[in-house]
Length: 263
Image 1: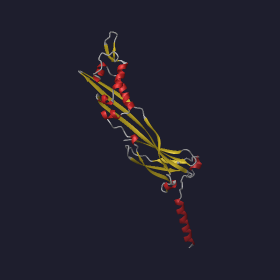
Image 2: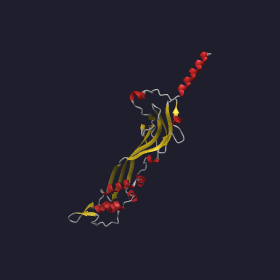
Image 3: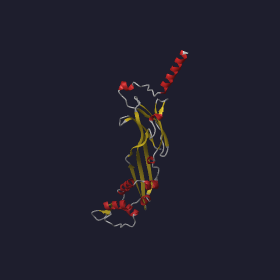
Image 4: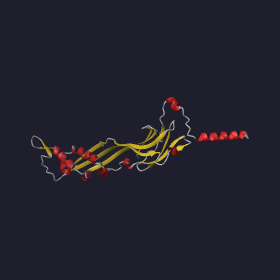
């Protein structure tokens, strides 16, 4: 009978020990002096804007003192515009091309989730099998990261104002007298304000600064599209997701980042 009682208590103690949040590396903090939390965000696949990514984050700490686990996103967009226009004047075809490699458009870090959520406890996310806090969170890729997929006339119409203005200004310096008169047939062909003349009083074919500015001031998207032959954009957009496990009484903690391409 005594033997049976001893076996029962041994089984009970073993069961209780198995249910605790045991850390197999409990001495690590003492050995290394590193008491920062462990935090790992699983890699996610490339995805288009609007898709839902199933995030999985695992965190633990030597002293089991994680207070908050946060999720945030940031990204950058790098676009390259290639635009071609052409003017067919009698027997002469004038073709012009511009390439704009736009600087990266950065999206600053944006917090989108924090755990434990209101009314919950971080222990609600503890998984015995992982011996850690495991948080599953659905992340919908924001539309701000959507790729630019327009082309030709639609692309010109969809351009930001600063990009379109850059194109107009770039092309304005490549025009000549014949082209400007072709675009604006009502102009005075003998204007010395718009067209340069040489020392002999003959037109050189070049535009004056006023002639260049006239094209800039009077070219809207509809007129620009009238001479468009091709407009394409290459869009490279990447998003970085970051989780941070913050210990009690600290302002920062262990971070984990994963980056994916927007399709």
